[in-house]
Amino acid sequence: MMEKVMRAQTTTPQMRRANKMIKDITSLSGLDKAGLLFQILGESLALTLFNNLSESDLLKVRIRSKELKHVSISLKKEILEEFYFKLLSNQNKHAVSEPSDALFDFLSKLNDEQLYYLLINESSRVIALSIDQVSDNKKQTFFNRLEDPIQKNEIIMEIGNLENIPLEAVVTIAKDLQQKVAFLPAPKKFSRGGGESMAKILSQMDSDEAQQYLDQIQGEDPELYEEIKQYYLTFDDLLDMPEHLMKDFWMSPDVDPDMLARALRSYDEETVNTIVGFLPKRKQSMFAPIENPIAKKEIRSARAALVEIARKMVDDGTFSMDDIFGQEELE
Image (cartoon, rainbow, N blue to C red; front, side, top):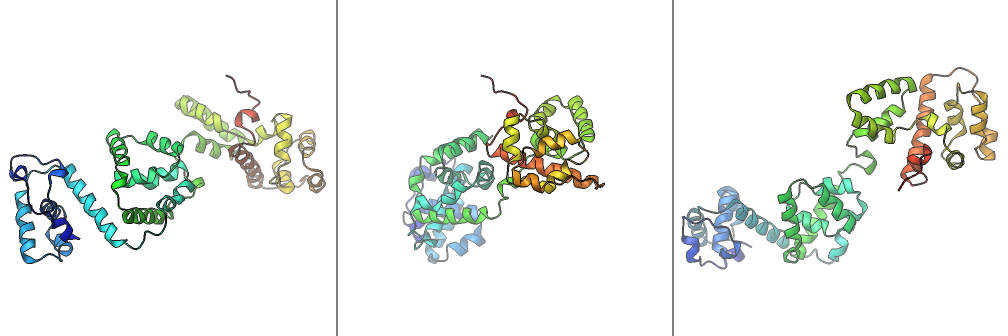
């Protein structure tokens, strides 16, 4: 491959002007690029890559490397990327049977969070190639999360030049990314803290203890308090839902009669009978109130499990948090 890099060995007069910063890759000859690679990679590594060159050609590269003293960092990066993609092409000449549009199918199975963490540390060219394979909504979400305007601009510019990437390199990039996907956490394991995470923790505490924390948060961080209230759901909330939601929720196949019996321990008979009345007839016959004392931990665990079922139904779109609290959406 280095013979191809060396093929155009004549340098331009402009390149020989030592006092002029070189910024344009189009003005570089093959010998210029080889000389710069020698600089970038260092002599030890470069020699392992240039081992197909003759002694005379290698001498020319060394000389040219010493002559090139005013080269921009961005140009060096561009040359290194060009060399990298050519190297990938040579390694994968026989790996092009799969259509390129199918190589990145795995990206569509990632959620926005996973896609961001998979790509954020890749080069602008790899990001551009990958993000161009996903839906417009995923593209927009990804770009909205980029904080560096320079990086965003580089990616956009790379998208306009994707046709210059050899198919063999595309194959390798796809395979490398797919291997990295295996190390991404599952969607439900992604968490960035905040009000939603705190609300879930508070929902599993005793109501008095949770209220103490809420009062403290309200005094110290009113904004966080309001965010928590958007997600904060307790077992008592499930007992006070509008009647049409009661039917949807308590008829759920995930609601277990034994679990409900533990959760309703210490509630008055009227409340118990009301809730049990929403169960399917078969589950009503299976329900048996718990009369004997049980550990508070068991009660909390059962209530937390039922709250989690409600959260999943919210996530699935069965109903919303506003529905649970009887709040109508205003326009």
